[in-house]
Amino acid sequence: MNEQQTSIDIIAKHQTTLEQAREAVKTRKSWSPFKDSPSTKIHGPEKPSLGKAAFTAHLNQPFTLDLPGIKGWAGEEVSPFTQQKLGITYPLCEPENIIGSAKRAMASWAKASPDLRVALCLEIAQRMYDRNFEMVHSVMHVAGQSYTQAFSGSGPNALDRGIEALAYAAIAMDNVTPSAQYHRTFGREEVNLDKTYTLVPRGIGLVICCASFPTWNAYPAMFASLATGNPVVVKPHPIAILPMAIVVETCRATLAEFGFDPNLVTLAADTLAEPVAQHYIKHPDVQIIDFTGSPRFGHYLESTVTRKLLYTETAGVNSVVVESVDNLAESMRAIARATSLFSAQMCTSPQVVYVPKDGIKTADGHASFEQVAQTLVNEIDAIGHDPKLAAGIMGAIQGQVSLDVVEEAEAMANKHGLPILRHGEAYPHPDFPNARTLTPLVISTTSAHKQMYSEERFGPVLFIVAAQSGDDAAHEATELARTRGTISCYLYSTDEDFIHRWVDEYAQVGANLTINLTGAMWINFAAAYSDYHVTGLNPAGNACLADLSFVASRFRIAQRRRPISEGAA
Image 1 (cartoon, rainbow, N blue to C red):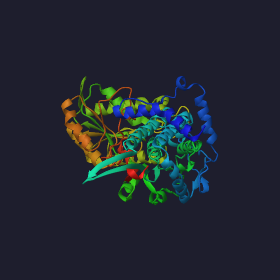
Image 2 (cartoon, rainbow, N blue to C red; image 1 turned 45 degrees about the vertical axis):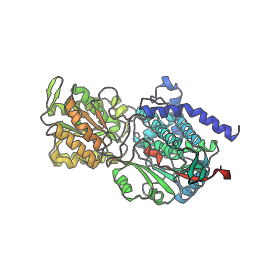
Image 3 (cartoon, rainbow, N blue to C red; image 1 turned 120 degrees about the vertical axis):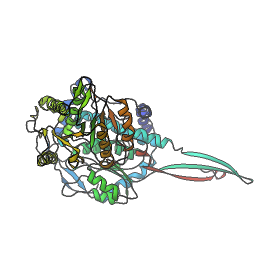
Image 4 (cartoon, rainbow, N blue to C red; image 1 turned 90 degrees about the horizontal axis):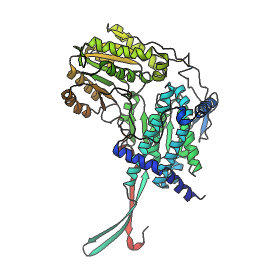
């Protein structure tokens, strides 16, 4: 089969998926080409065991990638579930070799049709979905996510975000007509021009991945750059390399199979002692930087990176305002589940719950502040005291840093004499007896101790704040979002006037708001194609997953024109 026919076939193979994705981002409806349940009724009985075997085969071995400029090997990943080293080593490469190879690979990739580039990204997405049971264990044993969360959140849900970015990339590139004819009279002379418009990629894209959710932001960043003609260097966190090594391996194999240089996608692994990110960040050929991680480094990049594209998602202080509720137990259960999910090691985890000090209205009558707080604690206990349930929801603590966060918060509460409503405690994981686990610490406080809860604490810590009133609570929540950043905010009220009073304030500070959600859907679940993730309007990040602006600047347009009489092509 010739190269042209191969290109036609791969474009046709994924055309329906692309059309459906474009329709989904237009209508914001629920849609996915994948199943996000690991059920054997969907996947059959063999895939789970084959995926686990594929993961096990990586252990205590070099992860072989034929990358340019390999100068050594290293790996320092430790499983949060076994607390044993994975023993996998990865190639460490000279940045100049990686950059040079990516730049050379870019030439033919930039000339490929946008339809082909998008289709190959869709092929990569499908192949990653086919490897998802392997990815499950890889994410579990570097990040600490539970089996079900690793399957869905780091698999189909993350891939959906990638395809969402592809839909916007296709829309942005389709909006540029490849050619046009121009006719106009100047004085007595008729001018007739042929004009050609060329999409020109910006340059090498650097994708800096976070440790706790390596694939979530990586897929959209990688696909947005690749689809628009840019090569990608993937820089994983040193304690969570394996998932992204698998992604890079799949990308390189797919690209090579279809005749492109595999160095369009490379892996920039490093160690905690010798980081390499700055070399790539400062290199003039690296023109696009996607960063997900700590607010400290994200804000540093936002203040120092110039004359390059920079897309950041860091973190903020996510709040809940409880002004009034229909069903107290259901509302507190929704908050408890959200704060327990992945032991609050998520960018959407609620950290501060505001409750009026004089209590709230419920369908069953008045509930005091103490009743609301105790109901929330009871709902957390219901998860934490059931090891099987806790394992599925809380997973494990990725690293010592989150344990330190909890210990520091408890010490500060004791120092200021604040009531500790619930101590963080390990739960016994039914499958991994050595798992590093910790249930949420819950502290009762007031705005007099705002310094304790007004910065992100990446771990299972929840503050319940006695506010003067519901309006005071909403005011402080929106001010916190404006000054410290937020990715997700939550509000419970049966008073439509109260809701109406505050929804615009939340919007103005760039806070995505969930109102009165209870039941089966997690309140901090963000659906690709439907929910915008991060607004770019507060300190929690400058970019959104995903909208047109996330992809549209990754290419520019160069034009040429000449008189039609000269036979311009």
